[in-house]
Image (cartoon, rainbow, N blue to C red):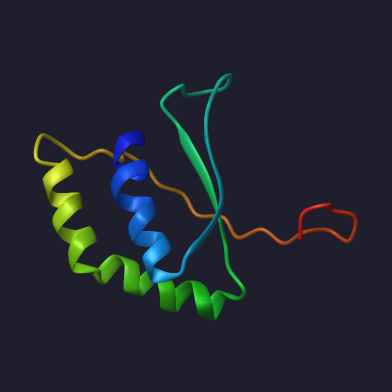
Length: 91
């Protein structure tokens, strides 16, 4: 999964205009197999538009199928939409 994100997913996201804030693996926690990432959106409308472009991207569809020939790489995915507080250093 990490290799796919680094070599396939991230370049496609970047090409489409999706901006990443960061990617993290779990060092201590419930699952050492977790990958958490944060993306930057100007609005929910932008997220809907760009995410739809990503999901329909022919290169993504092809590469996802190739990398999942021997089984699905993502067992569970969760989305959260966060809003910074007035005192957050990251906005």
